[in-house]
Image 1 (spheres, rainbow, N blue to C red):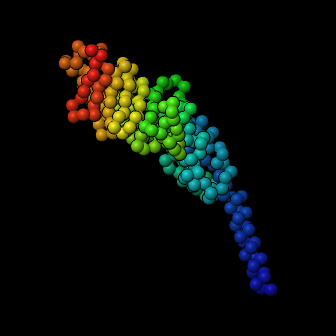
Image 2: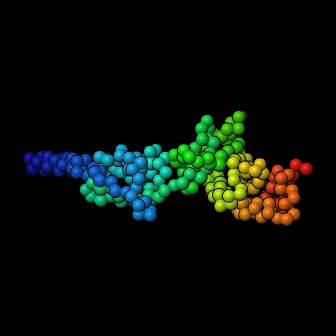
Length: 241
């Protein structure tokens, strides 16, 4: 009889624990600040609404970071903390759109951190085309270049560095970047000049291109230049003449 009573008590305590777990430890308060200690915008707070009422113990970092609403919000969660009984504290960083990747039948906007975010309504971004054998017959790449909400390697690091560097040179505006292979990355500028680099020569491509176009030897032929190949030890210029 004593064992039976003890069993019932144990079951009761377990049930009470489960009940309190779901009643008392549900998210009621979400506080969010940016890495610059600013209050998170209303649009981001709205994206956090689905987490309200969820069990504080069941919410994990991956649950938050892989939320589709948060991935496209333009903000990335970089730290989070739980505080009993019902509070969740988040720290996020802003993500600025850097370029657009042609992915399947649609374009995806990629941030400076390589993540898919919401497309801006007031910006025209460089278009990135991955055409390295994963493409279909009409030269439109499949979804392999973007996985889990991010542009994958080996594309991410070179493309972000190339686009970021060229942004610092206003006279060299990229319209399209075509990744044909690690040995051939074609950068098309708004002035119709193509710059060719590879994964070992893309560093300082914008600075090198600026120096070439500014040199006295090239000044008289600038309008006829069609291509600058930076993949060799010395740059090769191809002109229309």
